[in-house]
Image (cartoon, rainbow, N blue to C red; front, side, top):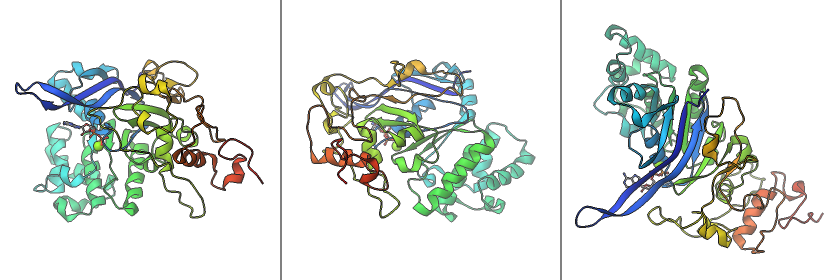
Length: 384
Ligand SMILES: Nc1ncnc2c1ncn2[C@@H]1O[C@H](COP(=O)(O)OP(=O)(O)O)[C@@H](O)[C@H]1O
Ligand SMILES: [Mg+2]
């Protein structure tokens, strides 16, 4: 059994400047060797700061843009080899919804027309049954069938996202890429949309690639998480494993930025030093090294590979595993094995910057406070 979607070593560099003859002279290395897979019925979250390449990956796997290198397989078929007809058929199988549904819904069309369009385009239901199908789609996303006569501007942000979801569902896809689907919504509306996506997944057996810059949002919706930094995946794990023991310093920083819901609970934030480097001129070696509190010389020169637990294999080689087989926890960090765990360890070079102290504290404190973990930040048993 193959995965629903497999991306292998995707690369996309955008020309950033050109010379007099129109030849590109520099490139934004938006996506630089990204591999992952999505199983049927699963939600994979792609998480990372703005600009790290998440939307570019999304567009590459839908073949909305062409990669410079790498491959995408959908149900085992090479997407890059599809002709126009086959590509149209693929477009039915995989849909995308965006952060701002208003920008993606034609303001001059009624909701009924917006939802009816893909039905007609793909000849999914006979013309006389379209209206009933539109109403069914609206009910499916929790909207009233009479809304079919209204225009997008008559709805709230949350309702518009429901309409965008209904439009994606119209073609009965297997995969939906949700690109920051709740980032523009009020916090109170977010969980409603997340719950809707979750319900729809259960009812329809959908797979999602859920793109977000916010780890907190993906915690409850994702089965697995891939953390991206500057065009590459730095860590991937089942969601629980990632939240319980993030290994890459970058994942730890992202996790420490999630607000703690209980006011009395403490979590030190790991404030990353310095600006996020640019994908125009990314750092050599590990792309996180300029901001990493654990950096050693090797990190500056040698690109770390994504290594899965215990296997010693790069993640790309585990693609295509049978469904149901547990997927390892993979990290692209030279020092993954030696970094402080929840118990706290001093980094090998003995450096102890304020940023590091905060980082280690963030992961050695349980929600009950320092005593619960039994050690202080240097790994000594805590004073009682
Ligand atoms: N069409 C494009 N032309 C040039 N640069 C682009 C284009 N699309 C994206 N980029 C650049 O690629 C990088 C990744 O962008 P994007 O995939 O949108 O990141 P994210 O979705 O994670 O915020 C950014 O530096 C962005 O400016
Ligand atoms: Mg984006």
